Image (cartoon, rainbow, N blue to C red; front, top):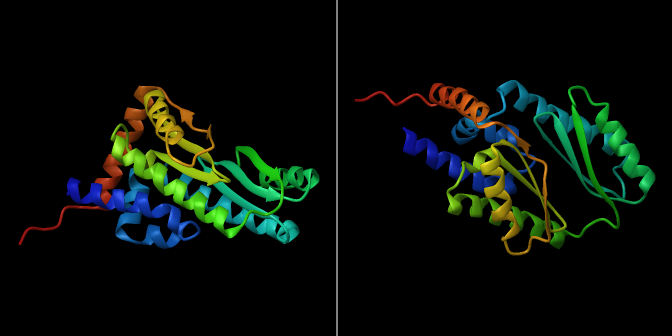
Amino acid sequence: MKKSLATSLLFAVLLLPMLQGCLPLLAAGASGGALAAVDRRSLGTQADDETIEWKASARVSEKYGENSHINFTSYNRKVLISGEVSSEEIRVQVERIVAEVPQVQGVYNELAVAPVSSFSTRSNDSYITTRVKGGFVDAGKFNPVHVKVVTEAGVVYLLGLVSQREADAAIQVARTTSGVKKVVTLMEILPPAKVRELDAHANEAAEQANPPAAGG
């Protein structure tokens, strides 16, 4: 069962950049369920993060949807805002709106006052994200599920609940990935004992979500 679970997780990790915005559909499948169970965030926190993202998107789009390109990534109830807006005033107002969304505990405002990025730029960003995640897998120094990767205009943002060792390994992979202009770490560093505790709970949840098939 463990080999099957690891295969499902690897497949899900590599597909994530191509499935942004489709997380509820992914979570409905077997690999999505396994991915959610192994996450160091509780299921409640994962649900809050998804809700925060769509509420932030809905509220901001209502006011600033035109002539803007804004992405919202919530991890452990802290929100990364990335993309481009047309003025500093809008940049500040977007942060205010997101900060007022229920359950939000912090905001990283990385919006650029710049023209909206092109389709080719965004496609390249998705490709970079895939390469970074692939680099995590190849390095084999930590479970890639525990580090979320967001790329905007060649800048890679890393989020997650990790140990210092895991953070250092993730940063090294991202920095040495072709096409990456800069790495911004937003990961929360946890003591090793806390990491072990979270992993024990996550592994138990994964076993419950993927029970061994009955022998015939």
